[in-house]
Every structure is written in structure tokens, then in C-alpha cells.
Image 1 (tube, rainbow, N blue to C red):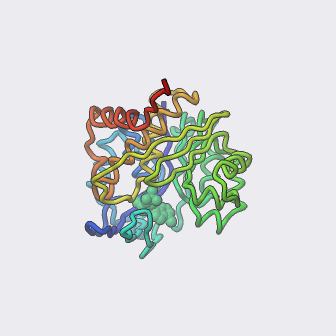
Image 2: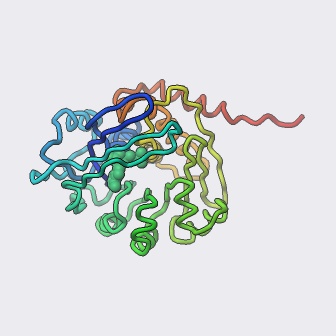
Image 3: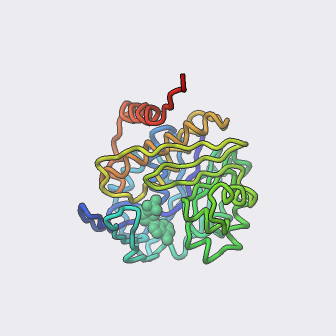
Length: 305
Ligand code: AMP
């Protein structure tokens, strides 16, 4: 099944308690594409990069079968740049710098060959741009979207409009509470689903995730990652693993959605082990499968005899 990925392609400068990098590949569309590339070969990326974008980063995406016809090259400026510093508590980070550069004028034009994508991933960008994507695609099987507090607070009307066309929303717990204006997560989930998305995933950082689909709630465990090094991109990687699995299986039953949530968690658990997308460059199928099995073992609840 084909997957259309729209989002940021970026360079990031990252500081964590364990080290520091400047200008490494990042962006939501990059992480989603790399993570999903382990499950499907039909990935079509729409984004924009500037004149500083390196050939080796193009080659990396190409080597993962990511089609780049929809990647715009804007010679007028540099690629979007984001700089962040993580606290000792890695759930906390400060944005030190955001340079929109060519991203400021990004217009997500979907090439004709991408318009009939089966699965659509809307990375965390301005809701009106996400809406523009939805207006160009023809009847996808599943539209999955990410967003953040910045848009919930800054452009709530556009966000709510876009949500009407979304099948599955993936957000974190604080975003769910803010969007629904409701402290209780279960009630918040009901309110968010009433805004449009049939299904909802609430990520709880290092504490796992909740899936709401049909009339089921699934609580996914968090993998106890020992080598956590850099959380950048974990959320996007989760979305990539999840969508990659759904595109590979083409099965949207609640049962398979549970597997997809775990596959997203598996990929995110790898992502955080090294700086940026480094760990997503050459994973082995067996490593992915083994970690999936470890996840299953984490939450086996014995029967009461
Ligand atoms: P995550 O850690 O999952 O929130 O994703 C981090 C990625 O989001 C980084 O690689 C950044 O380049 C990208 N990013 C940060 N701020 C923005 C923004 N305002 N718009 C689009 N992408 C962003």
C-alpha cells in the first residue's frame, strides 16, 4: 500500500545531557519516512529543503526507497533549522532556535502520482497546510495526523476544521488535555474523537500510549530503554512505525491497530538510542521483530487461578 508523508525536512542542533550535535538531519517527514521504510517500499515524501541540503541526506532517503518527486528544492534560502536542549528529565526540552528559512513559504503541492495514496501521514505542520493536503488527495483509506500545543493555542479554528477530515489523530497527553479542555484523559479522548477522528492515540512519553478505536481502549506499555540518548523524533518515528505496519498489512481492525501501536513504540525505542535519525539508518528486520516480542512479554498479565 502506498504512503504519502507530508511534513518538515530539517536540520537540527541537539543538546542532551549526554552530548551535543550541530546540524544533523531531522524533521517530522524525515523520521516518519525512515521509520515506515522498514515496512513498505511505496513511500512518497512532500516537503521542502533549501540550498544547504546535503547530497548524502538525499541519498539516505533514496536508499530507503523514499520517493522524492514531491520534495521541493528552494534555492532562495536554507533548510528549516531547529535547535533544542533536553533537560535531565528527557521529557522536558527547550527550543533554543527556530529558523523557518524556506519552510516559511512551503506550499504542499502533491504530485499527481501521489494523489491516490492509500495512507496519508500529516506530520506536525500548520493545520491550514495539512488541510491543503487533504484537499488534494483522492479518497485515502486512512489519514493520520500529528499536531502540537503551538497550533492548539495559536490556530484552534483551522485545527478543528482539519480534524474533521482525519481518521486517526496521534498526540501526547498534555496536547489531548489542552485540545479537549478536559483534565481526565478518557473524557478528553471522547471529546477529541467527537471533533472528527474516528480513532485516537495518546502518547505518554516514556510511559507508553493509549489507543482508542471502535469501542476499545488499548494501553500499550513503554519499553524500558536503557540506552536513551536523544528523544528527538521519537513521536514522528512512532507514527512512521505505526503507519508502516498498517500500510504493510492493510488491516485496520482494532486487533491489528494494537500491533501497529506496538510497532510504532518499537521503532521509537530504537530512535532514542542514538542522536537524531542515526539508529534508523540500518536496522535489521530481526532486531525489530525481537523487540516486538520483548514488548509483548512486558505486559503479559497472568490469570488468577
Ligand atoms: P519530535 O521530537 O517528535 O517532536 O520531532 C522533532 C522534529 O520536529 C525535529 O527533527 C525538528 O526538526 C522538527 N520540528 C521542530 N519544530 C518544528 C516546527 N515548528 N515545525 C515543523 N517541524 C518542527
